[in-house]
Image (tube, rainbow, N blue to C red):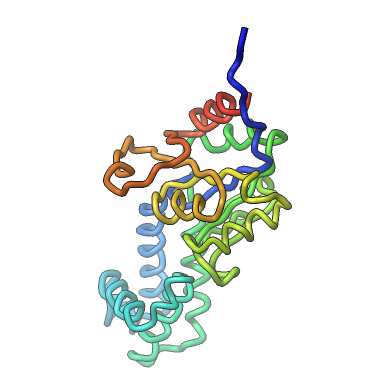
Length: 238
């Protein structure tokens, strides 16, 4: 009897966070509403002059003028608030309090149902890390103990799809890119970015999208959840 040889298990699996481990759009929407309610109570001149939409539009205009803010959307939001506070003569010392309020709400994420069981099933089989372009705080969220290392673009100074941030995630875990698998929801930033950095890349496609055909990106695997990710790992690696 002959058997098809299988690759050894990867030494590490690294994850994107937002929209891979939890949905982020409703969280940001809620965080912006909480922030605006805080502004209405604590910085009323800002709330009287602006709306959530006009503050968002001002941020987009600021980003167009200063694209370096793409690396840290939290810094962009802070700069946008500072500009709004200055415009209406509100106390600038309140901006940090406003940001604290926003980040608390921004980190009130709810992982997809498969995430916690999936991380527990991976524990001990591989090293687990994260590489993100966002501002999620795993400590605040309560998931930090599942990850041996985490690299975030705002602190690292480079963002996906730059190979450097993927290499930093691998280095933090002490593994070569060829010994790592990256899992993310974005075909360009996550899948193509990781592959170009020398990692294998799994597309976490929770919506049964066929966009990879339009984009011309070929993930090493396409999974809908952690169950399918673990099934692929077992199938490929025994």
